[in-house]
Length: 284
Image (cartoon, rainbow, N blue to C red):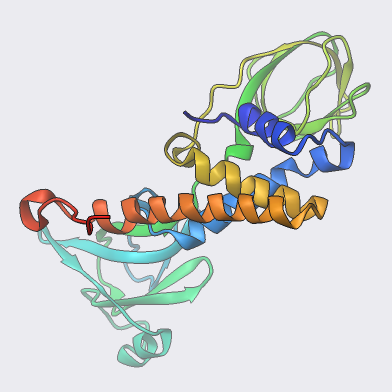
């Protein structure tokens, strides 16, 4: 079992038996909140990422990746050998090399601000780097489909908001494939075939012909569908101020799914049977 964004939205509406307009407009919020709770509760290998780059000679700062949250390691290639830098407090790093004009082979790094590391000593060469880090995966709510329109007047532009004249749905154009086809982030609801969509920046208009099928899956929606479903239902039912017994059921099923996911991410992913043997549990 797995969920696309479209399938998960439908499941939340069906489970709660709620199609009310304001409720539906918050479906993205429910799903993102569930993803956030899972993300902050379970340490999965999936949340780790590698990126290669290079330092700049004479520059004590190095930009963090756009989706960076926390480091696992930072290494450089020095004379064909990989060397790992030690992560320290920013004050330690600055005190170790108080004169940034003094260069050498880097030994330490620290978070200087939200967008930059500070390196010490200041690199004396453009060392190749590899950073292994904790990152925020793209939300299922950012799934994309192709929208085809006809009778186009004007030119639609990437990154602008389009709004349906009949449905009232709005979303962002991710990229423009042609004058009549562009890739959009899926809206909470659906555009209506035959309605006019208008670009918020360009003022261009077009008639909706069709949208492609939603086939996008994320790691969580494919490998942890129950956690994502029941986490979304907890958020949705909280919004509805629903009955306590139903809320209790959703919460218990979400916690049960989290426990199973934690068993995968914090036990099975980190051990192998050759070293540890198969997982053992007491007989019931």
